[in-house]
Image (cartoon, rainbow, N blue to C red; front, side, top):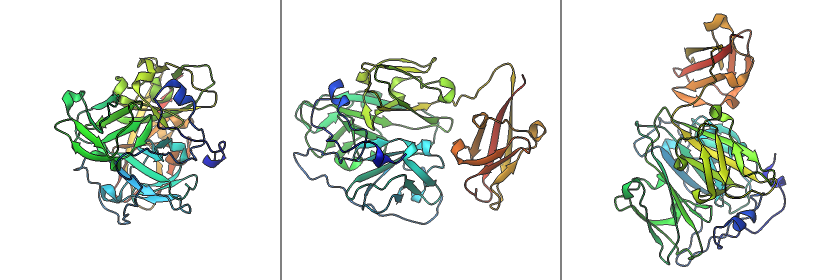
Length: 383
């Protein structure tokens, strides 16, 4: 669906208190530029430099990266330069914002992780502020934190969670004002040890400031996204992805409504076992509700009547098709029963262009480089 076909233009009100009434006034269209109020300095977007060279992934600066672009009204493709100009291989590890509103991964039409290019399904208006955020996994510790603040006339905020310590990199912190994303260029100073960040403007006392920050994301962790369309009455949403399992802590869940972040004050309940999350209000009919959560272990469908197989391949750089020999060379007919890992990183099934259950073949929509490790994991029923 073309993004610009969703409704007309609306005024996004970011200078009011963050309330349930405020949330209901958000646009479905994502096509009106958010008006950030600044009481001190200008916050105009600036174009970042890009690079087209192919290099290895550098994790030394951390596992979260951000890059800001200003749309020209013509192009819908963007090429990152941070992290040596590389992106993840799956869209579930990437977030995109437009004028502070999150676009879920259905608005990413194509992705070339190696060359660091991403294309949207629509052309943003000239002057739109596009931010690309992406994740790589490293180390062996999980830590995601969320904290909400009520402004008191100061531009500086001090966290108390995580023993009052912030990450060393600005890329690892997300700040929202009334649910609208403020990228790292809106942070004028940053003191990780003191747990303080200062905005380049003073928020109104009726605003709500939310901070989300990350320490690390282990290799065993996965980022899951699931989209819902509200019916106008429901307050509870049940996930089906990842075997219906949510993250173990509320801090590890990001909740978006029409691209606007909803802080934890508006989540009244969460059931990690049943995969349900309950909000304090019922979103309007047609609202786009997107859940993004970080899980310690990716759940695969299992029961007493299934068997699991896995087989590793070394790509030759020539063929995008791989043929299994385990399980007598048979694959399941159901694509969700097949999982693919590329160099240890999970790849969404949307990167499988075709598969033949009888011939046991899987064909990718991209060509893996020579020497890359491709692991195919599949589950078959014994019933």
